[in-house]
Length: 82
Image 1 (cartoon, rainbow, N blue to C red):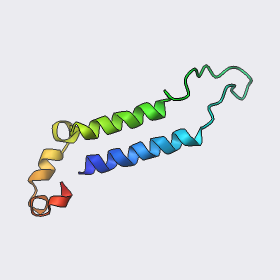
Image 2 (cartoon, rainbow, N blue to C red; image 1 turned 90 degrees about the vertical axis):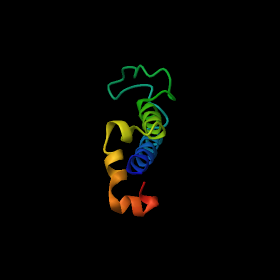
Image 3 (cartoon, rainbow, N blue to C red; image 1 turned 60 degrees about the vertical axis):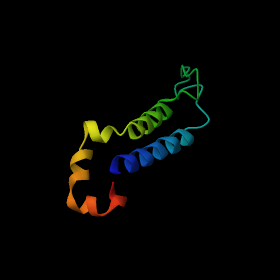
Image 4 (tube, one colour; image 1 turned 30 degrees about the vertical axis):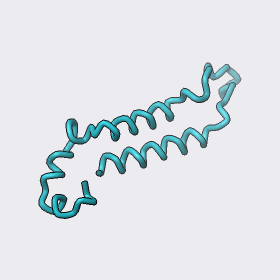
């Protein structure tokens, strides 16, 4: 549950950071080109997609403390904590 909540919050944060930089700059502050060729394949959106993929794959069960968390008595009694 915590991984899904963190992934959702992280994806929203990355999307908001991407929107804060819109429109993409074409020139840097010194006048040189920014070398940005695709405004939609920005690293913010890649990270947001990665967070969603980790949550969808339940990566917390294999790579984190998800299984240990699910075995706690307080979590077993309250299904909404899973």
